[in-house]
Length: 115
Image (cartoon, rainbow, N blue to C red; front, side):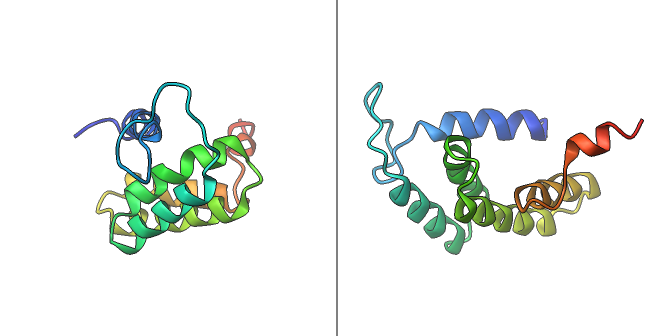
């Protein structure tokens, strides 16, 4: 088993470089601004039963625009599915807390300042 946080971050970064329409890496520096294409690929992955890939596809959309609420809510839905699939309470909490944060219902900075 791998470290979940490290795997998600590394996987998202590596997969974000893959062109969602062709499944191959785009030429260096190419950015067509195809947000809708990436979002559609995330929806397809989700409804085809791959919420992990859907969550990873939406990550760069959210990093580019933190106010992209459709992408945030979609990734939150994918994380909830992943969370409810987990047998481990730690992984379940990791995914469900991430979903709440994307929905704007949880501020991890507020928890850290409680000490």
